[in-house]
Length: 216
Image: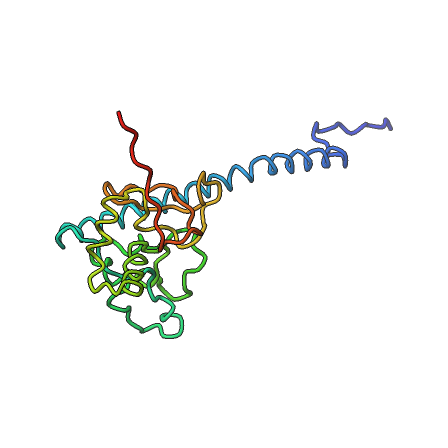
């Protein structure tokens, strides 16, 4: 009886060396792609954050026009921590969300997608602000240190003369890779949203005045 050699199917298994080479290639590709994906994710979050600030700016502008062109008086940050221990609690009437909430299309604009300090409640929308109201800081400082009974006017005039000073800004550094201070900000006038233009550690109670324009 003649011996019949089995025919090869043309599909042989990988050798160990080939598998190691493939794994090494995949690892190298992941090492190249992951930083790019992370950068794209951070960019998307920052874009969403800027859109949020523009939405808040539209709300402030609506308030501004309805209140004799005066900025709203509100606490620098909302008191959302009350919802952690008391989910049925109400916002303070002078909080950011209570003051500006009715002026925006959705209170979701107050939540930065990079904010890790959002309270763990069923629905944080309308219960937390990721952004600090710098104008509120200045108003509070005037009340405390200058006994100003109506600080809204003085602070509004300050912003009219210092349009590069933030009205709102991220309450913490959240957006790595920024040319300034890794925070987004909302500015007065045209309500533009962009990177923070001054060092928050310098203190908001001592605003910096831009240098005068050069003579023509």
